[in-house]
Length: 309
Image 1 (cartoon, rainbow, N blue to C red):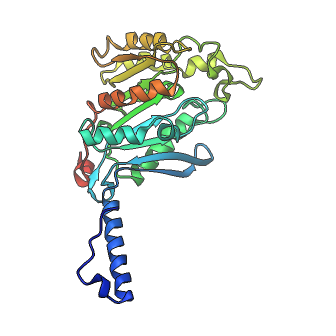
Image 2 (cartoon, helix red, strand yellow):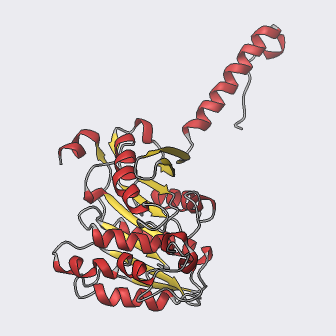
Image 3 (cartoon, rainbow, N blue to C red):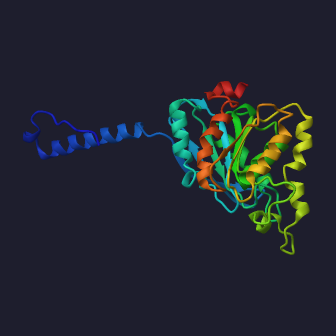
């Protein structure tokens, strides 16, 4: 708390006047403190028609959001297998990293949406997570919050199963995203390794509770790759993985990188960090991933201007 300097004659004032002056000073300090608060992280939910239940998501709003008069770029960050929408803030230090990057001018003030999926971000056997994301979540948050409308302000990223989901969505819908990032993506081709949780996840288990190889193949990024490569629009993609990843995320990421590079030279960088398939690696790669994406995303614009573009 800041020092409070009392006026001359404080000791001779009436008790009531002292209380009033004290309350006024305390209010002034609290008001100043509130004005210096940076970003906000809050948790929300809404009813999803596709899921038939509430859809939870975690939201990061930049400092000054409520009185800036701006529409902001948005990055959707997808969590990993059996994770939650709160993982990016509770384990990934998203708030601290984003605050630092914005303060330094490495990225512009932005909104981050961290939704929750029970189905590896696909329309799996257990629920239509892909449809819910595209048809329910994105329209909901982009109408409710001041997110600039249009591809140029929208990015998507994820880790592990969320990386798998972000790669699938960017390849299937390049018209929606201007940049993407996949950290240790579980984009395994042709099939997941025997130790992958994909083989025990309800999204890919058939009615006999067995891993469905055909379902995996039909939902993996290779199902969208040819169509993506045949059109002109590109989505710059940042890739990263740990050097000792037990699922060989490095090898699978390099295979994906090799498939995309002829179509978008210089726009599929990959970094290998010391470590495994862990939050240590994902925290280390979050800042470079965001900095890369914001080389391709537009900055905030006045609300009316963004609606006219």
